[in-house]
Image (cartoon, rainbow, N blue to C red; front, side, top):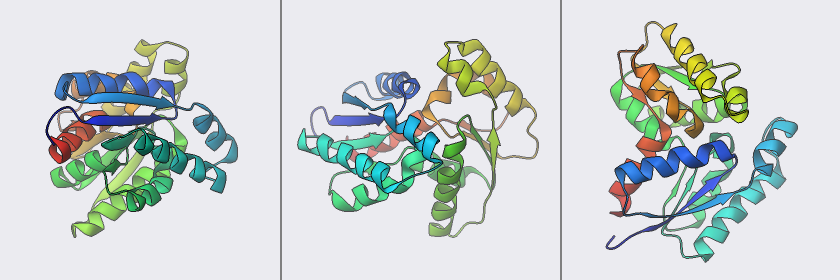
Length: 219
């Protein structure tokens, strides 16, 4: 695509906004970014214990809004809503990217024993589903272990990035026997350099993988 593609980033939590915008500035500064943030989504999915029909409709409505505003692509940044995004992918001809899909594909290409670190319990089911679906599509068997970095998200939300990163780093340092470590949420990205200092294999983040994938699709 010639020029500067107009990409809408749809967020359910404010802690995802900076990581993905930073990744675009670093890896694809030509892209024009529009941020849509509805923090009631993360509050309501936690209260409901999972996706409801009402939450699915709200996810669909945000994509409709973005494309009505001339988006060239939509990227969702909260993996807890992955199931609802599939309808949007089928509805629109332009790219609708789920948060984890680019990272999942990269991880599966790099190894079979994968640790998926997360700080938000509702994100566990969707990322496991993403790995299962992608591995089946490429005919590969993978063993994916979700690993909760307990207390990290709460630390980040109260403004303690140092504690957030420490929890994730120490969780990763205890891992053994894995080929790849993945971060299941955009908000975890700032801990990547610390995790790379204690885990010697590939450490993948959702923003970096997503930006490079979109760039390949649209640039």
